[in-house]
Image 1: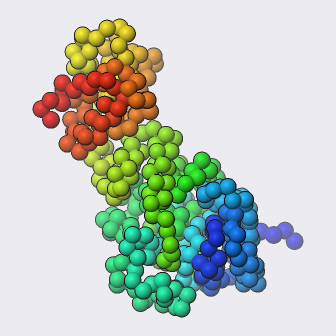
Image 2 (image 1 turned 120 degrees about the vertical axis):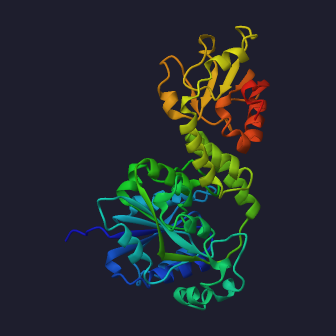
Image 3 (image 1 turned 90 degrees about the horizontal axis):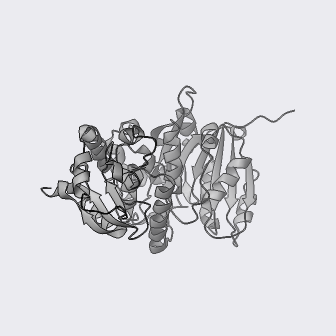
Length: 408
C-alpha cells in the first residue's frame, strides 16, 4: 500500500529548549484533526539537553520525526529547510519552540489554504509575542492551564496581545490592503503551501543570526504572487522565556543588511534604515509615502540640473547622482546613478546603468566617488529622509552638492 501525503506538515526548529518543546508538542497532540492528516517534524539545531527524549515521548501520540543537525551556530533557516525536505504535507506550518496552540490551530490554517485558486501565506496570530513587554504572571501559568484556557484568562490584557496587533487593526485584518504585508510573516506561527515554499527555494540559509530570515522569505513569496492573510483563529501563544536581547538586536541589524544586499530596492532600504534605528512599524507608511511620491515625481526631469551641478568638474572626477531620473548628461554615462523609480530606470539607454534606490544605503564603498549630486527629485522624500540621505552621501563621497534641494 502506497502511503499518501499529509494535509499538513508542522515544522518546529529547536535548540536546548526541551521543556518548552514539550509544551509545543502537547498542543499539537491535541489537534481536532485525525492524526493521519498531519505530521510533526522537529529539527534539532545541535541540542545537548533532553530534546531527543522529549520527541521520543510523543511517538505514540503524533506522527513525528526527529532530525538532528550538528551545532554550527544559529542555523534556524537551515533547520526549517531540513524539516521541509522531509515533509510530505501539502501545507507547511511553522512554529517556534515554546509556541503552544489550541485544538483548532491546524484546522484554521488549513481552511485558509483550501481555495486552490489562490495561493496564500497565512500569518498566524501570536499571543504574548512581546519580547520587551512580557505578560505578568504568564510564565507561571503556562503548563498549568491548557492553551485555550490561557487565552480566556488573558485575552483582554493588552500585554498579552501580539506585538503586531496594531498593524493588524490598521488594515482591518486584511493584509491585502498593505504595501508591505511580508514584514508581518514571522515564523513563530505561519503557514504556506509546499509548492509555493519550494518555488522560492525556501528559507535562505545565508541568514545565520537571529531575525529577518522569515520576512525575507515573505518578501520572495510576495514577489512570487502569494497573497498574505491573517488568521486570528489559527493562534499560538508564545511561552515566555529568556532571550538575549542585545545579541538578537545585533543579529536583526546584521540580517537586514543581508536582506538589502540581496534585494537592492527602496523598500529594503527603508527597512534597513528603520531597523538600524531600532524602529519597525513606520515601514508601511514610509513605503506608501515613497510610492505616492514616485508617481508624482515621474514627470520631473533633472538632466539640466545635473549638468549645471557638475559643470566645473574634470573628466577624471568620479561622480554619483542620487535621484538621477530618466537621463543624465552624456559625460556622466560612467557615473554611479541611483533613482527610486524603477519605471524610469527600465527606460534608460542600454549603455546606462542605474541602481534602484532612494539613497539611504547604496552598495558603494566609503569615499569611492569625488562628488555626490542630490537632485530635486528627492524633494518629496527630503523632509523624512534628509539626514539619512546626507549621511549616506557623505559616506560615499568627498563632496556633496544639492543645489536643487536648497529650499527644502
